[in-house]
Figure (tube, helix red, strand yellow):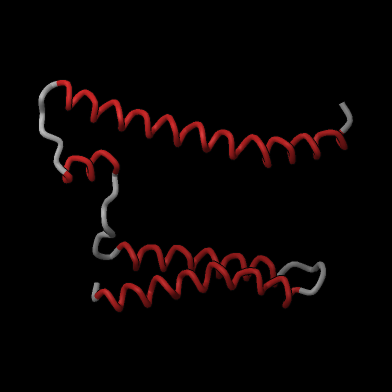
Length: 118
């Protein structure tokens, strides 16, 4: 098999296979949640909003989670910036601008944590 053939195949699998896989696992997880609720109703158990929140894992952000996410995104942004700036190809300053997205997300998490009073 020629090496040039692998690039389009990998691209095709990545572009079309990954969304299909993500949809499959999302629907599989949702069906499991519905089965749990159905079993509870069949067993004549009361389904409260708190139980539904636990089943769906829809928890509010815990104290400090915004700070952790801010540090995570800032670290990713700084690492991407350093990797791109120290590359020898192209214009490193312009490539370094790609790191502004994770850095700005990290800064917004820091601001959100300060506004919430964590």
